[in-house]
Length: 585
Image (cartoon, rainbow, N blue to C red; front, top):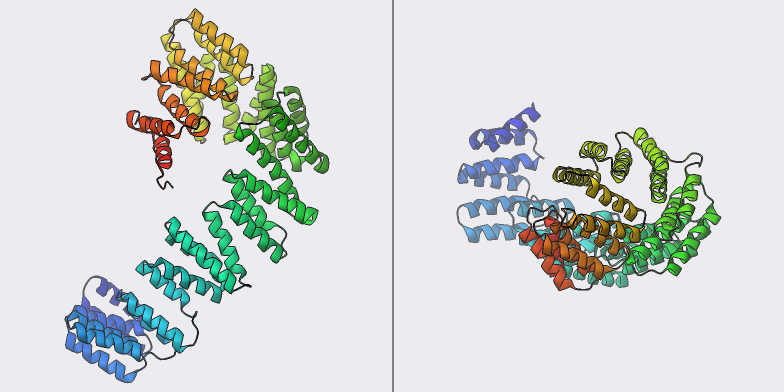
């Protein structure tokens, strides 16, 4: 019955029927003398009804019964404040704090009463006095942190939260969440970092402060400093390298390869084979070195040969099997795309797809790569056979869509445009945005060119050149494209030819030549479908390779202002703001 009355009283209260609510809350309080909630709601109803005399009488009566319930003075003060008797209200609030007993529950109840009225200063004073009475400076540190957060006092919020962490190290993850939500500027993180250094010096055994400092460095993407912290923690706690490995993954994903490599090296050298992270670290170290090399664009053939030998050394140590299959695949890609040894790449992958117990997704990836390499050698039948196998096994999976897309592109290379376009149309619905977009682009491209021409020869020649580029036969591709220009001058494919040449120059790291091709597109075909892509790529070239940030910034701005309908406009605006120095999430 009590629960039913409580729900009914709450409904009356929410509907503004305070008289009915007051009657029920009073009844509920009489039946549950220790339930302050019902009494508080009863008082609220009387105030809303402006029954100030009845309200005062009820508070006085309750204070007489329970003089230690100092939160009642807050209700008393609120009553006066509602009647614009501010001096009397302040006196009652002060009386509440002055009569505060050395009881943790009483302190919390009084502070919450002040918080309910948004009187954060008085709530803060309550907790501070409570800590003095109970002779424990950290007992209400977390509560004070919350109050300083509400007040916007970042420095004191940090200080209080760190005090609470020292009192209860189990709050570490809670603290990370609180700081992530409430530290909004670099200055805020500077303050947290400073206070953490002070706490680490003051509490030498406070591992939790060192852990939090490492977390701060990670938030600031200062992975080098974070690595120093996690290595120190790993040694101090005699761990097996787990936290160092986690940091390596974060740094690797954020493309701080130098720090990631240092972290993997630490595990390999200092933890050795007894660490459960030894194999993973050796494997990921290779992938990291590969990405650092090829994404840096300044590598030499000697650099590639050194990396190749490191892969071979790894496989000599751990063998070629289902566990090391991803490493074999990476090595095959290195051979095919960077060392130009297609035959060696094919041999590696032919071995891989024969491994016992190989994960079916890894096997499918191996087959797709092997098919790519066969296609690069001109063995189209072997390629289409492998693509079809993956397509059949993963019909409704992204892997299947990828294989189908590559098979369709093979038909495009072979000038079977009608069948290729039909496949691209099906792939428009792929759950992979990348495959879907590429399929749409090629479908529209084929439809436009076939619709405009009475002959398919120009498109066939262009597709043959596209295949030559895929096969890394760049000289032959350029000859094919130049022959197309000669045979069909001023053809609608002219901007596409320039774009393909730009892509080749980029692959060869001839960035100025790549830019020149793209600039011709913008100059000659400002309304063409390649124009927005060309502007974006020129901007990227200047940002990442040609060291002309101002030019890049101007081009990104031009793209989102003049080509606002482009799918690249949003990315261009983000990049522009980032280069301008805005805080872009």
